[in-house]
Image 1: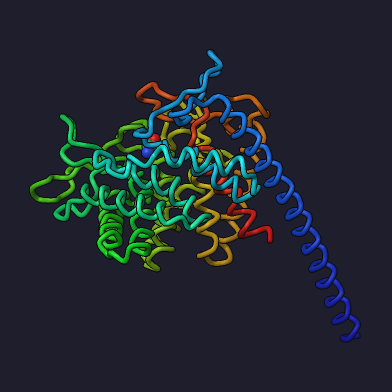
Image 2 (image 1 turned 90 degrees about the vertical axis):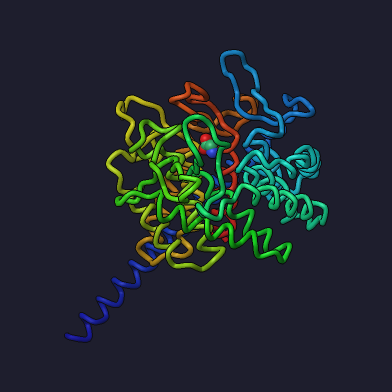
Length: 400
Ligand code: GLY
């Protein structure tokens, strides 16, 4: 009798095991199909965008009323995303025409290596030259980046322990925005490529100061902290692009999540991993996080649900969660992967453009600067860049 019960339990467990294996295989197949479909569409869209792009410009957004691609010069903080996305898509497709366009537009950015007037050199030079170097190992790319890292380092203030984001204006003495965490990967990598540890030390100091001053007790982040240049102390937290000073501006939360996850990878420091997990916990369980996991432009926007979603905040968060899942316990890993999968599925439906529309951008419905009445509910080049990065991460890390 006992033996029969034992056999039955064994058979039930075996059947359940086979059932869940089959289920996970079928959802893997479903994601494989979706990821390839998205990447193939992105290839077509970027080829279409290339035709619309003036020779010396980079894409920024798209005006659907005028049916016009909106472009920028190389000094705009987003100039690296188009060449960077092309490098990712070349890595995916091995299509030589994408490589050619990536090489052409990466080269346009070379002069920015001497730009000491911006903190965005990581976005500009690492997304472009960094991805190009990863695929080609071209030494000239390395040298451009090392010069760029020196330029970025001139903005570091050792009394404050941060890189200055924007040059001083009448409102702030030494503004530092959470977005600036994203430029630290560039510095860490440049220490590896140059052997100069200064870059790495600046990155770690900046991350530590951000950890201390930018985050509230609930692990939401201020957009901007202003520092006193004499004492080095924090003056006060503000917003620039969010709803109000104490709000959680959605893209800023995604930048922080991505930034601390990446800094854990670069340093192995547990504080950064804990911070990233705490930020993820704040975001994924936020009362205003919609079921489809595409955040509103600010988690505290006063008119939720009658306000805009930000696809860029979703794609950055998705890419970050895919990496954080690699460093997390089983329960967190499941939650992060489920959320990232939900984001990818939803971005691939109503947010995704049809081929040869949308100025060549893959995604619609991002928000650049709502309080500034600029770039509201439009395609944005960084939404596409991090979407494509997330697709590549999903493919390379979870679908093999
Ligand atoms: N780093 C500027 C932005 O996220 O809008």
